[in-house]
Image (cartoon, rainbow, N blue to C red; front, top):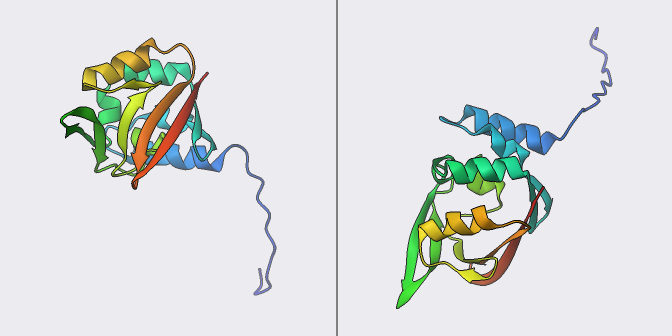
Length: 145
């Protein structure tokens, strides 16, 4: 002011990461506001409200619009490889990346896309994804609350 520097302090109310994800979800065509409800607890663990899981299993197009999952076949089907993951999508909120190969959910190997929905919908506790990222095995955990 009057060409003098002024120190301005802002007090933030809420979670900036959740607000950023909500903005991305709202901006995306057909964006899903539930994306902002997913919270990263640590690099491999996410908290997901049960209402979000139920909404996504009732209408899986809300999730699948954020990327592509292609079956991986090594003799028999051995999972799904993810491609074209969009920023601000449900895949991104869930910590998934381009090139990830999802092999199992809660220890059950994946043989079909329908099985993914069934395993997630049936789960009454935490969900664990067994995947391969950049050639290394990785477990992602989802705490359903």
